[in-house]
Length: 144
Image (cartoon, rainbow, N blue to C red; front, side):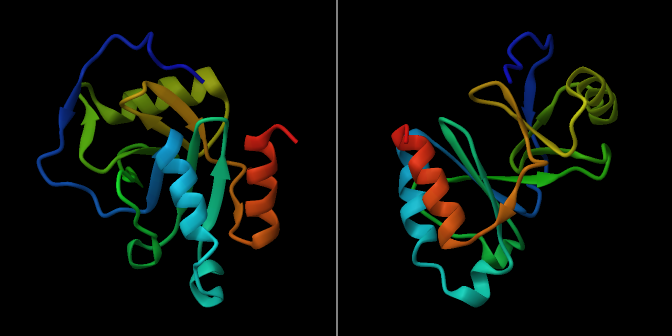
């Protein structure tokens, strides 16, 4: 969902938030997907995954989140229940008001508001990390 029409700027967070999700776009998403295939079962059982055409989002505890070069991180924001933001950026307007406006506009929670590209990503369809779910994502990306 495109969020480019929002009339405010982003600003760096004074203190980065503790990561709760790994976010990857394009080729980085494909590398993260490949990395997820190698995650041991105990760790995989603690992770949730969702994807769209260009993005892959993996949520869980910071210590369980996989790393690949180029991945970025997000976290829920206590000022706006249901709103997730990049760990290093925040809106330049009150976050609670942004959360209210987005929940009214999109009627889905939780949701990730991303800075670049400017989009809103629904997180309400995350599923447990399993080989079957990863295969479905791969099939979707391949157009099968």
